[in-house]
Image (cartoon, rainbow, N blue to C red):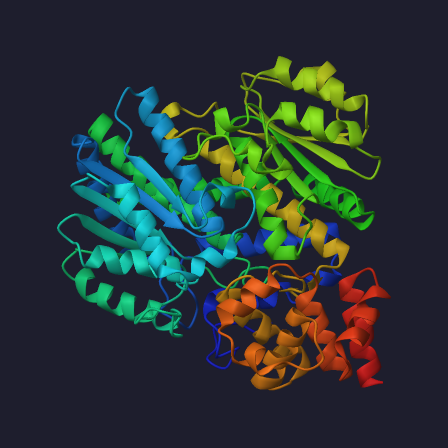
Length: 592
């Protein structure tokens, strides 16, 4: 098989944007094979070295481990002086959602230990972005700085962790630059999964620097441990550019490892060593093994979800505790990744915002999509559930089984298409009566109940993330939203996604950059002839216009393949409900 590591493989693209040769034909795979391919891609997170490319760091590289040790010691220091200290994680999209998850989880752990809370998060677009993607906000470095200033007001020592999987988000670049100009307060850390030389180097609108230039200055500060760049290479994503997959998982693994090591040093006086860090990495590798040992049952759910989506049905994740949060996060990512409708995949958490513990509190008044409690599911959604919808409960056996049984009974009155993802332990077993309520139960068996010191069920969270990523990715593949291993219907809502869309058009049509750019604008503005104002506008203006459009990328693709008008391209897409089939039909006709 061709390897992505060779110099000639998609040379213009950074690792996080390349296509993974493992999954080149994932769009034609059945549910079982989709899960098998995702398993193999996720396993690349733990790869110890990339053959023939010694310069690529991995998660277990000595340089990466040493930086993690330094940062764990910083966490220990901050726990000693919580009033003056703050750990802030910031990111856009998936990275921001994981920053939220980790901040709330570790603050919860500190609360259990009766210690002052020191974790905070920033997500581009504010808390609305936890539920509905606010992609355009990631293009503003100024807004990133503004939110960072507000988060850190009054603190004398701040460990700032900017997360950008592709080392590309201007929002994070602005924050890192601000930190480097205020080293008396900030220790800046950036986390991503490309080498620095592959960081985004395009000009940022209204700002003098590029992400790469910010990192090049960071490299100098890193020599004196004043700043840190953690950027192991994980290999390309299973779906090209979909950093919610490996990028999101590795973010969780790295930061949890750092924080837990710092906590153990402070609360239990444990030394932070290389062996200690590597041992914890092995725990996550075990989670991968345990999770994918249930590949057949995961594939069954992928098939069920695919059939629901093919029938214009909906997918509802009904979760308890932090597993509910994992459901909410996975659902929120389907809109920008697959061009899904806001109602296609939704997550609900048992106590709603009381359990979410987000900065801005209850957002229910913003709109129906922001009503996320189980009571909202029962009142708003359940009365309208149809036979094409699928409902998946997410829980562990130390959750409130009476509450689970009560809601399952209510749900069964409306549909039999009810399934469970359940985390079990030797001390607990799923009662037979409850088990009978589900059409299927995917049970992940753990050797023991996790200790609170492990950080609030971190194994179950990552396991559930992998399962839900497989379900939503696989379901949308079966719906025809992926071509080869590319997002065929992604939302073109920020400069990164605009550039990705142009790259996809060039790859599949062999057209020039300017031809691809023009076709994309025609699809965005729904015009045959572009005005001078449209053609000369900044990319950010194009992304704002694109945010209200559907099928932008597929329309542009058909325009280029068939050399046709916008209206004809839209008609051809209308003739094929499955977008992948529409594109394949146009490609076949053009080659005939």
